[in-house]
Image (tube, rainbow, N blue to C red; front, side, top):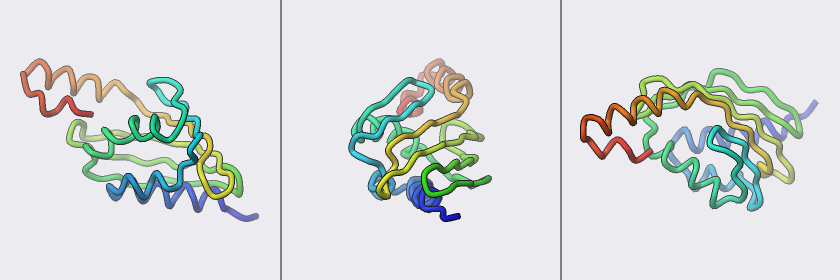
Length: 130
């Protein structure tokens, strides 16, 4: 069994986890469809808009597990951001022609919402960027 989708998913993951959003987006198809907690996103620009605030707040990301084959891959990770101390997540992707054409993000929004509410309540607008 080959693992082309897993290779793409890992390269994409390592790029954004290293803070290089442009490199990460080079693995994303122009017409990508992403299912994420905020709703469906369509197109690379919408995908960038979703991912950029998170990557800009990212302190570190630790890969927990990754599985895949030629078409589909699943990557699970834990991350630390300036806003929350622990933010586990997972992304399942479908790859065609070396690019991610479909993505399903799973993460818990509650810690981010609570942290933003605490920052807004304290009057510190800097933490509201993500």
